[in-house]
Image 1 (cartoon, rainbow, N blue to C red):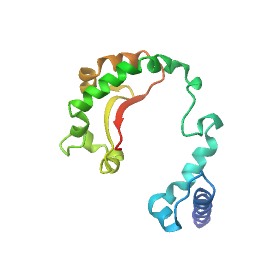
Image 2: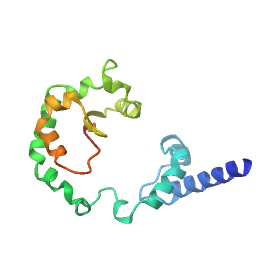
Image 3: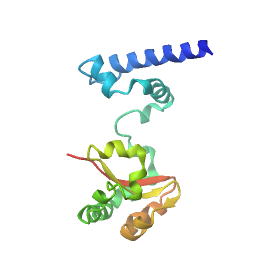
Image 4: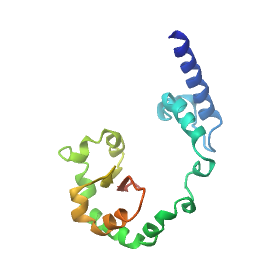
Length: 159
């Protein structure tokens, strides 16, 4: 048991060092900043996932040639944009940040919400949100016609 713990700790340390010193072009200003903002405990699983990711998918933006089934969504971007803007004008994104909203219980996003990131779920692993069916019918029709889409949401990031 101790040997397994030692191997995991050594791997985590090596992964953290590699992420801090070698991964990407930008660096944290100090080790202290990396420990505070870089989430070193996740370095080992992230490195394993990175090593298992195909090379074409490792960049910050994935080339859509690898996903030809998404072409209809790309072509319909004005319609999708219009529904997203209608949500924003109706204040829907702010409503998801309300502690009484069902979206408030999404713990994975709650830490990001404090920094101004908000979202509106359309489909999530086969379940279409009733509010999305009412507010975004064109986008949902496009998603229904697109194979392989397990989840879709609108998200708004702060400036």
